[in-house]
Length: 261
Length: 83
Image (cartoon, rainbow over all chains, first blue to last red; front, side, top):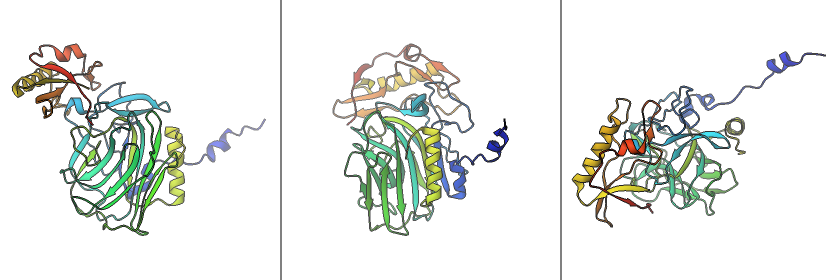
């Protein structure tokens, strides 16, 4: 009988991971590897900081114990994630972050399992510390939303929210937040097929400026309207992905999270 | 979520300080305190988060809720959820 195993080894396809975006990878917060070193935290361990696995090393700290998310080893299709508590008081934040400098197109991907969609689950904000995000993504009452403002407008901006509730508590989602400056489109798409599109865009691209980067808010008040659920990953890329790149990422999400994108 | 509250801000500050003593905060590994006192205007109380039933651990140190709450006095437990 022919031993085919060497041939299978020789022709094994490469495994995609976000590092393949190269310099375009802005940040990669991995709930399966929150310390970024391959170590597995104990179940329930408070995580601080949440390490950024991209070359930018924008790890986000949280020095207050009650506000640190905790590691859950088996939750999103049996894979780990960080639990942001039912009190929606937990978040991570880092000042003077330089990301998306002079970027007019970007893509942010989130893997999330809500515990509640009754609140505004804010995934990520790059802002100026006053609660007004320069870019912000979240799920307002389960409706996925992307806001892009520049420089730090108090209101308005390119703001798209899905008309329909994209999420229900206890289910797992892969959500894409995409701003395409070249085509003048802003899109939010969830893995269960909820989508919304905004065109044309009115805001210029993101400036080269320090930001206050926060995981766990979309610009709403820090006291309360944060995040209540399990975050598997947040990945930021300073471009719109090509079809082949999206296929690679989709395969990665399927293999690593068991979610069909 | 359950909070430790008092109309007297110093009582809440003291409760937070006691929890920090119990947990060794700041612990030199990035955790500097347990909570930052807030004020809930509609109830007229200052508050911090009560240590959860499962306690707190960062994988190096672990504390039960009872250990964290040892010596915490003069605060009232109240429960609410943020809108």
